[in-house]
Length: 332
Ligand code: ATP
Ligand code: FE
Image 1 (cartoon, protein in one colour):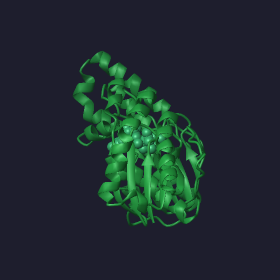
Image 2 (spheres, rainbow, N blue to C red):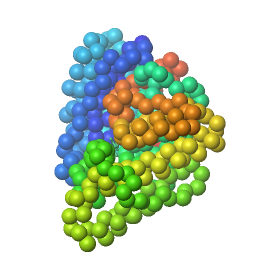
Image 3 (cartoon, rainbow, N blue to C red):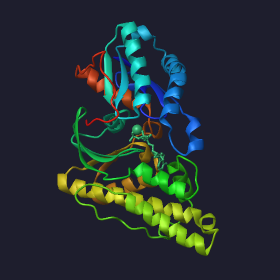
Image 4 (cartoon, protein in one colour):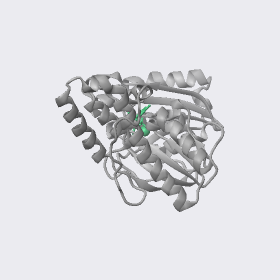
C-alpha cells in the first residue's frame, strides 16, 4: 500500500509518501512570511500553500522513488485548521485523486498528531493515553484503536503552544517563540521564579492565568530594572517552561490514576520541547509508565502523520467521497 499524504492545515505545506506503514519521504515547506507579523495571517498562508504545494508533492514523490500511478490512495488534512489553507490541500488532493482515478482519504489533523506515535517503533499498546499539545490544542486523548479515540480532557482557554508563544512575545522574542523558550531554558534555573499552577476541575487545563501572571511579574520587575529580562532570560524561560510542563504532566498523572492506563504518549508541536520530553521520561520512571515520544520531525505539523493516519483508514476501508469539504472545526 503506497499513500501520498498532503498536510496544509496551518502555515506549513507538507507532503509525504508512506509504504505499508513506513515513511519513505516527508517534506515540508515552511512559510517565513508570518514572522514579521508575529502570528499566522490566514490569507497569506493559503497563498503560500498554493505556491509550495506542487514542488513539495513533487519532491516527496521523487525522494520516495514512487510514481503517481503506483499510489494506492491520496490523503489530505480535512479538518481542523485554517479554512483557506485546508482548501488548497484538499482541492489539490481531490484533483490528483480524480486525475489518477485513485481513492481519496480525508484525515483529522488532531487524530494524525496522536498517530505520529505509530510511525516508528516502539509503538504504544491499546488502550493508551496521549497528551496532544500543539499550537491550537491541548488534549488528553484516550485511544482504544487507531481510529477510535476520545478527548477526556482539554484546555478551557489557551493551548500549551499558545502559552509558550505568548510568553515568548511578552519577553520580546520573535514568533513562534516556543522553540526559543526551550533554547534559553536549557541554561536557566527552573526553580528561580515561581509561577502559579491553576486549579482546574477534572482533566482540563487553563493557561490564561499563567500568561497574566507572567505579564504582571515582568512589568513589575522591568519597572525596577529595565534590563531585568535581558539579565535573567534563561532563568525566566526555564521557570515558565517548568510551570507549563508541571501543569501538563500533573493532569496526565491524574488521567493515568483515573483510567489505570500505563502507556502514555505525547504528540503535537509542543512535544518537541526538550524539557517536556525529559520530564515525561522522569514521570514514566517514577510512576511505572511506558512512555512514547515521536521523532522531532513528526511532532510539529508534517505530512508523515497524515500518511500514517490515512494508512489505518485505508486498511479499514474508510475512504472519502470526492465531494467532501474541509472544515475549520471538527470533533474526532
Ligand atoms: P494544531 O495542531 O492545534 O492545529 P499547529 O498545527 O499550529 O496547531 P503544531 O505545529 O503542532 O501546532 O505546533 C506548533 C506549536 O508548537 C507552536 O505553538 C510552537 O511554539 C510550539 N513548539 C514547537 N517547538 C517547541 C518547543 N521546542 N518548545 C515549546 N514549544 C514548541
Ligand atoms: Fe498541528
